[in-house]
Image (cartoon, rainbow, N blue to C red):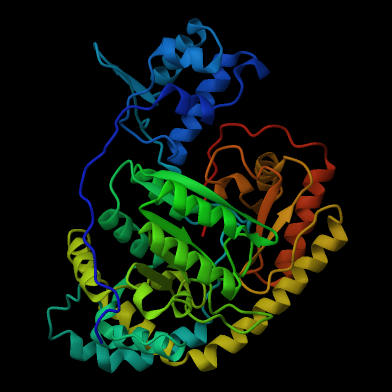
Length: 496
């Protein structure tokens, strides 16, 4: 099947910027007049931003006088900030060329620590990802053993993905209402890998990218590390403001837009069909690539599972829409199997880019994924029923122990987006760790620093008893007094 819209190549102009502007940095920092000594407060904030990836490594910090002006503080204060950053290893100076960001020995960026398993016995509510039943995995492994034996006589490299798996994913799209052939499918190591490949091919540093606010933290990290300029559009408890999306596409003309329309992470909202049509039309007029994240599309708890986003487009408006998905939320993140659907020529370019990093995914994992996908009709209904029970248990626990908090019950997905009523989320998350609960404050889902301090994303992916105990512990932590501003201790973090 030919692609309905001709593939258009991408502008390759490099706009790399290695200097951080004084106003840009000032906007990310707290008011220095609010605490004493101000220089230590600012140095801690910059250190945290470097570890969190919001300030890239090896970029030049603003001149002291410029930053002092932007912060409305003295140059002596900024000099002390930079001295402290150099002493702690977060910066170094080059004679005559300024001060540059660095990573201290023994510290790791939070993007790495998020991937590390908990080192304690805390109830983990930072991960909105289910496990895979042991029996299901055991039976699937036994089933694929003969197939794997056949593959060991081949080189085992499949940069496009295992042909059988590409065909199965294409058939899945077709069954959901979007005619697809294997040539339009690229198998990746998860949806995050798919997004990173797309950003690397279609965008260059300095390009504008539209993203929802709040959004998936790892996707936002990928944009920041690509030095892309994020333009945010709000998602509230009631959904998207399509007029803002339309005006943003018309006025900003972003190179790419990343959207999660199906049980949005973290709000749980589902975009109505009419709004999807309007987004498609607006993106087509602006020439913007749409990247639609359907990772959660199958997790419909109270409504029918939505059809692919592209089914709302006319045949001549599908060429600049890329759909990504994975098995992490429906099956198990440990599989590291994802995919993207795009015009066949674009899939070829993305496969070429992929070879530079991993040359192709594991044959074993892909065979396992293929087996699980073929059993989806049997495996998914019990998973959905399990999630409904856990969602009910979490809502009941919050009503019992923290009735002052509010939330909207989502029609699908894996978590509640809870409003605490006051901006204490980061401080509460840090205190909760002392009570044996690992959770992330809403700021990690924000496109800009300081937003959503009144929010927590609470997944319902652990058993009901664990959910009830976790909520009880958080209530106890809150009852022990107002949470203090978070310290600079770096807890292992994992947002999925």
